Image (cartoon, rainbow, N blue to C red):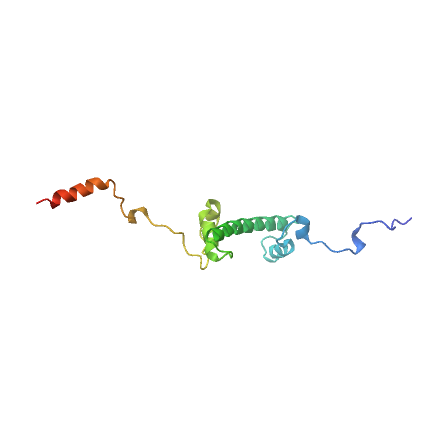
Length: 139
C-alpha cells in the first residue's frame, strides 16, 4: 500500500479554499492586513498571528465606534450615520476620546457646550424682588 487511498482530507483534495479571515471568524481582511504589514517595512519578519491579531483589534474598534454612532443617529431620529454622529460618539466616550483626542473628523462639528459663566444668573426668590420694586415706586 502506498498510502494514497480514497481517504478524506490532506492538502491536495482540491476543495474550496478558506480565507484566513473566515478561519479566524473575522470580517476584516487578515490577508490584506498581513500584506500591508509586510510591505510597510515595519519589521523584517511578520509572524502568522500578527495580522490576525491586528485585524481583530481593528474590527473591534470599528464595531465599537459604529455602535455608538448608531445610537447617536437614533437619538437624533436619523436612520443614516453621518460624520456628526461619529464625532458625538467618540467625544462622549471617555476611552475613545482619549484614543482619538487629536483626530479631526471632517464635517464632524464640536460638542454642544456653553460655559457656565456665560449662562444667565438664576433669580432666586421672586417675592423679595417685587417687594423692592414696590418700595422704590412709593412716593
